[in-house]
Length: 410
Ligand code: HEC
Ligand code: HEC
Ligand code: HEC
Image (cartoon, rainbow, N blue to C red; front, side):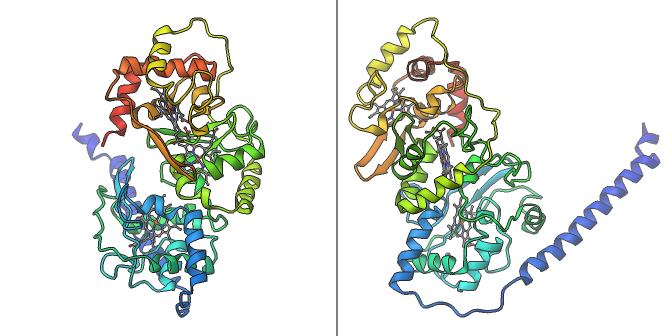
């Protein structure tokens, strides 16, 4: 045993890993210097005009900056939103114009560099949870307009929440490698992929499965490619436009959970031309099947009377039994993708968390049902919904409700 521990092959392995580590460290430092040296020649700040601020407001909505930099009920852009990653928790930062805790002292150059290269004013590499890889193709003028808009708002004193990341993930210089691997200069405003593309182990978005669907905070962000079985292949252009600009589409149901937030904070403000451009872009995505297949519709063997009774009691006040919404089209469930998944991931999420969306017609709201119903009852309701509206056999179990509930509870 002892002999094996000091055998030549062990020593070789140890020295190899020491050498690898040394090379990694050295290259990391070189990479860091490269990244920090790439500051463009100094360009003086552009004076903010009302026009610039208005364009910046539009662009910041298109890019959905507020979604990640505003805590629920908190001051817009003051940061502090937690991002749970497989290896720790990262917090978004204060990007209001506060001089001490925000970005009040940043020049246009500093700001552009953060968006294009993921490097902060003080040279820190930013974690890719901040989707700068999606912003690399944004023009300097657009970035400067966003900064002008942020600086036109009230500055908020809000110190950053320290990240909880273990070694080596707390080492910002290691991010240089990540950037070499994943910083793709040819994408812009593509934050849709932040949720709809799977991430590989290094936190980069998987390019081979881009937009093929992924899990995000317990919800499933569906396949956006033109695959007919699991993607948007069967959607009409008009349905897509309606969904992105209002948060629901006839025969497709509402945008719930994180997607409701995207519509509320971002896409509903886009001009019809920009929505149209987004639809054309989505249409151009080559079909990819996701592992998350929709089962074929099947006649149901039994009608679940308990699930039906509970649904009538708890849900028909807003969702009628025929799949039309009672008060508003946002509650229409006919054709809703989530009801066509036997596994019911998003149906369970909406039962646990509720969902809401701010619209031009007012706030559309569904509360959580965990308080009044047992896990067993929720499973029965969920399976009834899948059978009634999705024509599939639901497989939701009380254990699944408990597991999804535990992983969303903080
Ligand atoms: C998907 C979530 C997400 C979106 C969308 C997002 N950010 Fe961030 N942002 C973050 C996170 C997380 C950090 C902190 C990264 C770190 O600490 O390394 C961050 C950091 C930053 C920083 C660095 C601030 C500092 O103090 O170092 C700036 C500037 C910034 N974001 C601006 C923006 C702008 C402008 C937009 C819209 C164009 C935007 N962000 C959209 C999550 C996001
Ligand atoms: C914060 C994560 C997130 C972001 C960012 C995001 N989505 Fe989604 N998206 C989701 C989730 C989760 C769902 C499922 C919603 C549901 O259950 O109703 C979804 C659903 C959709 C659907 C409906 C798909 C179907 O089969 O029913 C479309 C279309 C869509 N998203 C388009 C987009 C586009 C376009 C963008 C970029 C502008 C985008 N999403 C950005 C999370 C996100
Ligand atoms: C107070 C009205 C109201 C009640 C009661 C209500 N809902 Fe909802 N529900 C809504 C609205 C509004 C939406 C759309 C939310 C959005 O777009 O953010 C929705 C969305 C949904 C969705 C779509 C989820 C998705 O991923 O697309 C499902 C499924 C659902 N509800 C099921 C139920 C069930 C089951 C019950 C009873 C236990 C119920 N709802 C009770 C108003 C309600």
